Image 1: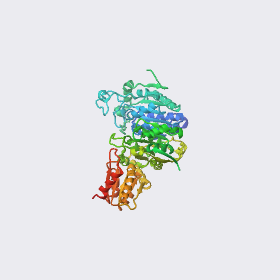
Image 2: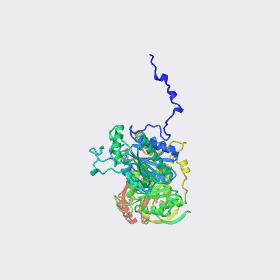
Image 3: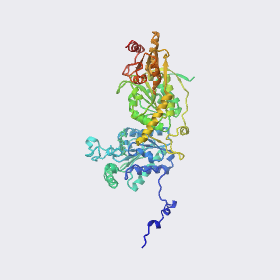
Amino acid sequence: MEDVKIEDVIKIEDIIKQENLVFSKTKNLTDKTMSFCPGCGHGVAHRITMEVLEEMGISEDTIGIAPVGCSVLAYEFMNIDMQQAAHGRAPAVATGLKRVYPDKYVFTYQGDGDLAAIGTGETIHACNRGENIVIIFVNNGIYGMTGGQMAPTTLAGMKTSTSPYGRDVETMGAPLKITEVVALLPGTCYVTRQSVHTPGNVRKAKKAIRKAFENQKAKKGLSFIEIVSNCNSGWKMTPVDSNKWMEENMFPFYPLGDIKDEFKLLQK
Amino acid sequence: MGELRLMKGNEAIAEAAIRSGVDAYYGYPITPQSEILEYLMSEEPYKRTGMVVLQAESEIASVNMVYGAGAGGKKAMTTSSSPGISLMQEGLSYIAGAEIPCLIVNVVRGGPGLGTIQPSQSDYFQTTKGGGHGDYRLIALAPASVQEMSDFVKLGFELAFKYRNPVMLQADGVIGQMMEKVELFDQMPRLTDQEIIAKYPWATTGKPKSRERNIITSLDLEALKQEEFNLHLQRKYKEVTENETRYELVNCEDAEYLLVAYGSSARISLKTVQLAREKGLKVGLVRPITLWPFPSKIISELADKVKGMLCVEMSAGQMIEDVILATLGKTKVLHYGRLGGVIPSPDEVLVALETQIIGGK
Ligand SMILES: Cc1ncc(C[n+]2csc(CCOP(=O)(O)OP(=O)(O)O)c2C)c(N)n1
């Protein structure tokens, strides 16, 4: 039998046609290849945040604040006006900006070291004042960017480069549930904990982000979205194993779901 | 003629802020400058001009709020005193690195540590030699009267936006607390958002389809690009030095001896010049108005003509280092100062001049 090559039968030009297009990237993401490790949740969190802005038609009126951490280069990927803040200071930067542009949309995007260690003060007070902004908080239980040191959110007993024998809560303190703390403050309107490790969870997280920006539109005050995420590099696991580990270890301590809505704490 | 008022230096700063069309003031209380925040809160400028006034949770937060608003092209400022300014150093370094125009006021008190609430000039190093990390400069203005407290707020914002650079107004507790007659300038309008977009194309005001996104950052991980950016800053600083060096000369034409002093020390030294002249001594005063850029050129020129210079500072001798660099051994340069919040009298400065410089070896 004669050798038939696949490209002789199916022409690629016939496939790449406008009418066959089933998925496209939001215009709010640049074409730059993301610097995140393959398997990490940051990229998905970036994407759904940018999709929400496009779907709501508010991209031109939104300014994002990038933190110090793995997402320090968020402005390389997010195709909107962006400011880069000092480590932990994003909620103060966002406050300063939002107060002089009350009709623009302002959000911060922060890691757990940024938000719950060095920037705890700025976080608590922006939440307490009920700044009309959105905080997206990616909790991967570790300092990703600097190479996997212990974070305030690191689980008890969890091994990191600065807790090589496991986090000893007697000497290193217990993991901080900052999201539950900010939920207690009168200025927070909507507080929720999500994840982006399965298609279903991505959809839920995106809905939560949409709701947060709708709240900002309605000038309701601060919406706080925690995304529990893996850090496969920092945890030294494959992406698949890290997601399994996250379900088995992170979710019991950081349970997913809404914690506060319309200024009311939800009973669990 | 503008409106005349008898005001404290701190109040003059607050009123000048409103009248300069400032968009936002973010601050945290500390003596001896809490009157600024208090004045603004009681004046309610948000009713007068729409200006935002917010008490922040710390100076770290204040300076970062200024970062956010300034990066949006708005006129934003904060004020504090020494310990609070120390906390702001991280933010100032980021602001300089991101080239954000803004005004920071330091009504200096004695240190180190919690020190004292009494006036001092011991933050000169911090103001002019960095304070925060990296090769950056603040344009530093040193008012010597309540009038200049008002005028330099306006001037400070003009320079800040002209060069996209943070400006530090370095006063001290004497000028902050004393009352003098001030001629206030007329109310200037705040810029509209449209005017900001037109004037400051770099500002993060929301990205329309018609332009690329604006990014305010001090980060560039590539060493060669970071070097390129640093060289750009250095070129800017050179331009500022050439165009904006400011100073005042009093009785320098025939002077054999000079006092070099800024701020409150210059006011005291002015009296000393008068006392010396009454005794027949040919003494003049050089008053740096910009601490950075420092008036090195004129001081160098004067060094060729005089027999000696006495630097008068309420510090252990900080500005004197710049005077020595400017004069490079051409003339005798010595320091006289009081520390820890003590204010020298004109008479003791005269004694120091006569014994250390005129009569000294
Ligand atoms: C003042 C200051 N201290 C320390 C650092 C170093 N640093 C950079 S990122 C980081 C931790 C970031 O961790 P996290 O906020 O959890 O974000 P992730 O990288 O995990 O996304 C640290 C400590 C810094 N840049 N600035």
